[in-house]
Length: 65
Image (tube, rainbow, N blue to C red; front, side, top):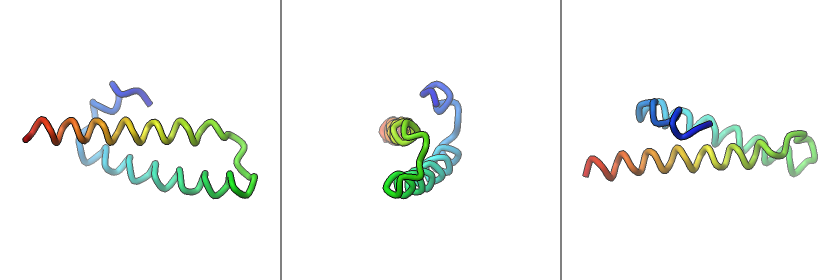
């Protein structure tokens, strides 16, 4: 997911997406440890998407202060 796409969303949507990605990442980690995960690159992509979301939310909070 591109940062530009994420910046177009509001804070509530970003928080919901963050929660969904955390759940997805948890499931992927479990599958990886049991050797059931086929697309291991998705873990890295998800982790980076989460970081982008956190960065955008932090920037917005800092701008308000």
